[in-house]
Image (cartoon, rainbow, N blue to C red; front, top):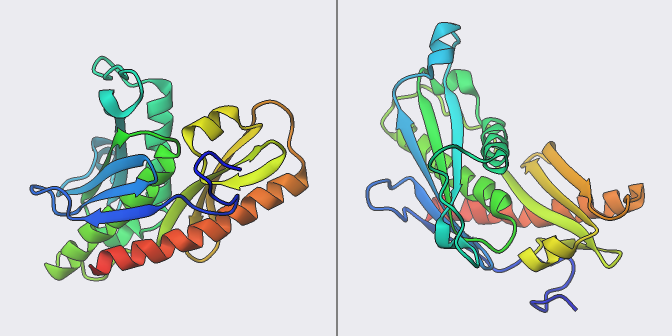
Length: 238
């Protein structure tokens, strides 16, 4: 029995509130159970300096990620003097995942910043950030197309992410923090809506996992992410 009485193949309750921020309508409050993340998208009409220097065509999508001090039990230190290795790794993951969803050449010479701020952390914050960030990105792209700032929508398809793991020799979907801390294997899966995988991060924490266990986790993740795609599509229509 899992701590929250879910089945092993069951997602946590998912909720999405679009246009959450007054000053940034292209924003989302997404909740995977007790994990809540504010994801917002801002369009800046210029390219990063490195793209200008290399005279790259098209635009850029990038991400920033932070955990607010009170998002965890016991205060998390604010990262003001420099980002930790974990934070850098997560925001790079979010950026890579979201860039897989757009045609950067069609985006034009502009940058879309996706900011992901964790206000409550209970496991799966990077997965919630990618899934919510995708919704915010779609809202920003919709605004660009409505204003005819892009000739053709650069959107290719949704991407979403979920965690899976092996706990007590059984594959489980969408891990709570306590489950993640105790899991024998922890895996984060980022998938595109056509079924292709963008990124898979898997670590054996205690003992190596078998190919069968890997396949079982991947199937669990795929089934869960299909549900996330439906939630994303419903959210942008509200």
